[in-house]
Image (cartoon, rainbow, N blue to C red):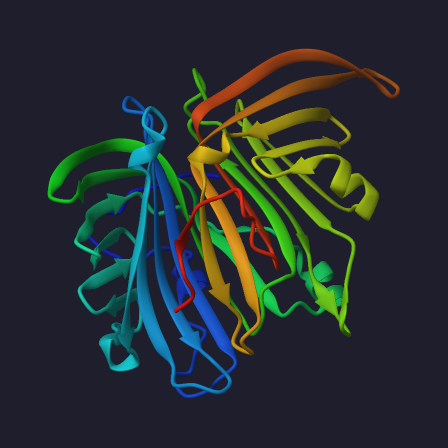
Length: 348
């Protein structure tokens, strides 16, 4: 996946994957553009969301969300949001992606905004390098098979951010720091998921990992997990996609913890993502039909992946271990609130 900066224009090859799917009239729709990033030296992480909510039985609205994580001082972790009437939302341009949400702006190469709540403020103005192609977590064949109610893609899976973030007026300078940007939309979230992202591996500037396991609902029943893993390392790309049994899902997953394995014709990987509960914050989402979902997130998790190369037949040999310490992004979501994690965001 090539990363390219085009500073003179917001027109990029994959701009269509960020275009708004909502027609500004229909109900039963949600849509989110989010970005996560780190400041490696200070062991900080950040999460910004630009949201559209079009409920079935209420007027549509939009919101800006912002969260800051500090691995060295979990008490400083902060999550706030601000909701607005839908007339504060605007789509600008035809050949380039640009949205405005009150005082927030999001384009193919810039993210800016300010959120104030309860006397606290988070303000950001960031530039990033747009990727030339989008990472799609699920193949078109699997989409046709599962007929999901929710869709996700990452137009900027591996990018670098520069600019400023201000926490209660205290400015933090971001200079070529790793992160990603994704786009979600649909009529209902999946019932449960776990997500891990890292592109701040120690000693491996071009390495990126993206993992997603989700349990969608179909005809009123929650299905077994679909697992999609992607690794780019030392110039090679590896994709692993499979259905997993529910028993395997539960054995390898806990709050703040996910262990996974995957095998291709060339590579076998064993990974562990983990963080402390105090490094996570919880957010309440609402589906357009009103059902609640609880998303628990950390942007300062650890990720360790052991790599094994095929040597002959079905034998693999361990060749390398890579680490992202306090720079991995780990997220769990389920239909029930977790009493052990602080609820920072109530539903809008």
